[in-house]
Image (cartoon, rainbow, N blue to C red; front, side, top):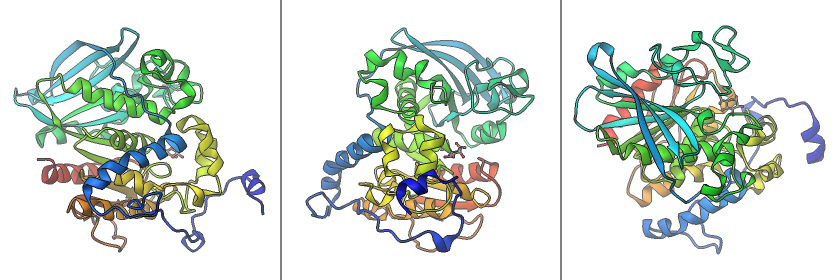
Length: 405
Ligand code: GCU
């Protein structure tokens, strides 16, 4: 079978562990001249090399310029029986591109750590409060009554509230900040046309084809840090970045580029996220670049069925987050995301975390269900489907309490 012939067959995901195949992972500590990095100082000099590899091959360049942001407070409302304040802000970049940010912060004046994450389907899906404007751009959600033609309807209010758990976070002393990913770029192949890759192309200094939708979402997350640094109630040294699935991929890419995120949570980010690309299990490179061509550089497709030729694998992306706390999570009912591949991605960061004298996962044994392992690098696989659940949040709050101080 030639690679071409294989790529033209209808795609059937391999879900058989015995057919995963053999592979050798690139060593994050090995430099192109063959020498091995032995300390954190040399790693810090070298990490730019790996970032450049991901930029050239997979996610595209990241704009380096900071943009002028102006923010306007649209509303400030007491919620959760007075325990929290809900903020809605409009942020405009260079007077040209506006987004809507939702913040839920404890009702007190002290600075608090916050969880920051993009949402799939509009801020109104996180909670039923009628003051939150219905997101008017294209979303990937399309449940019959809540969304029509990929646009949120009134019924979409609170549709994904279980993925946000605002009250749990407030009770634990955290705030939560979110923006719809589509406010930066709508999630479809033509999404770049109304997104920041086009509207801010001159200001950001990149051509649309030089980067990707995941890059645009990741840039959006960094721009949120710029914004949060101006909010007195937010402790911007303690921003815990989280992302589910495709937005987990974006979170990992954002944190690899931007060291201001204090801790990172990848919830079921799968292929192109925390899962090893060389493992032929679940979604693969051919499938993801065909289903979602806008997520990556066009040239990334050339590695379909040639994954062993990639200069890196996703454990190196995760290693770029060191020494920060990292949580990778999977779900048993989400084999598409390759839980074992996600576990191995997290596990293979150990060499780099150890340069900082931080423990990695500390185990090679795949854990049982609902039994988190690790410390600075943590992993769990829970029962249930592809989602971000109360169980996941309980682990993330515990993780943040222990490690983001
Ligand atoms: C699809 C896609 C995954 C992605 C997921 C999601 O299943 O194939 O790569 O992570 O959508 O974002 O929910």
